[in-house]
Length: 268
Ligand SMILES: NC(=O)c1ccc[n+]([C@@H]2O[C@H](COP(=O)([O-])OP(=O)(O)OC[C@H]3O[C@@H](n4cnc5c(N)ncnc54)[C@H](O)[C@@H]3O)[C@@H](O)[C@H]2O)c1
Image 1 (cartoon, protein in one colour):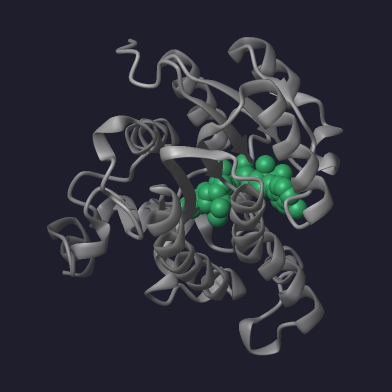
Image 2: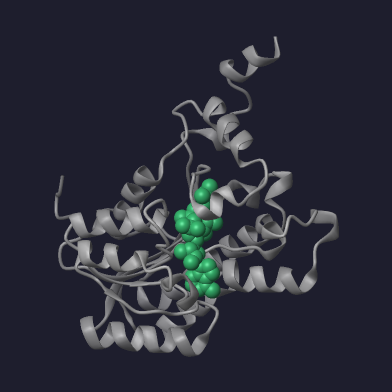
């Protein structure tokens, strides 16, 4: 159902890999709500070709960019400016840890891999915003969002160095959010999403265990990728103009629940 919440708005959506991706759902919902956008992902992810189906469905153009490359980001924003003039929203839906992929224990991580994962998962958010800032690409009252996870605040042992990357990501949202707000009236936030069965999510060891645990602990149950996309639409809409520099939990109440009856009953 469309209320045209994003009618006339233009944006860039990073991170749609396949139809499970949170960014994929965000693209579908933004399109439904009247937005126009460019879809982007790392050139290596493009080779899988899935993104073209989404582009067709949402009438979007696909522009490859490695989000760690200032050169790629420069070209991507130039393309967006050429196509749309200034833009109104950006979704950063990117995460990757080589240490997670290789099953390294947190106490024994490889620091070259740590740096790679940190660059992809956290610093890329700064790089995206720096590019937008330098090219003056954002309209006033624009909205920039990244996706995070509660392992930034609490320990989830197998989330490994991604926990540290998410803390850094959330800090960048606050720090850049200040400057973007003051200078350009642009808001910057992170959404801290429930565990979600996607390629990145399922790469975390023990994912099945903690998605089920989160489901039992959260009074409203886990938030789905579709529901996350609805929240992103709201954050891009004019109904959230003064929300900025926040880490917004979208987790069915998980973050504020100590224990639930369902969990207690498993231990009686
Ligand atoms: N799935 C979960 O449980 C969960 C929970 C909370 C937050 N998140 C976050 O949501 C975001 C999206 O992940 P997802 O769960 O949809 O998984 P996903 O695997 O579908 O998406 C991750 C994306 O990052 C992209 N990417 C990796 N390296 C890149 C690079 N160098 N440049 C550009 N793009 C690159 C991948 O190609 C992929 O499209 C991530 O930030 C993730 O940490 C996921």
